[in-house]
Image (cartoon, rainbow, N blue to C red; front, top):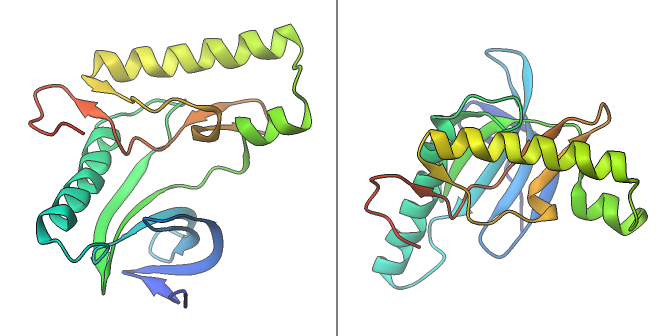
Length: 168
């Protein structure tokens, strides 16, 4: 697959991950001068128009769910857009490793580390729940830990928003 040079106003500077539904790029916002992560979804994943529409709505749901949250333990959403055959979400770029990578290298984390991670996770989820957003896919791969030990919850792709008609 050929990767784009840019998505909307964002310059693509690297590849962070690739999956069946789309790609996550490292990018640069020239207007503000900051690094971003850009999550994409290919709009033409299915020949079935209703399935394609449902996937696109789920993607927009993620942007709406996280876009209404402002918490140090939740990755911030900056923008939602479309470019050629891709819909994208530009979000906070977090320098760190996800918890699944950390656990692969150190399966038995010290108890104080576990307690710090759990405290931060529960604080972030409590905040989201108080705002009417339920993550519904909390797992080590969706928890990024910075070098300073700050936890960031990411990937609200199947989140439930209170009073939203969407159900996945």
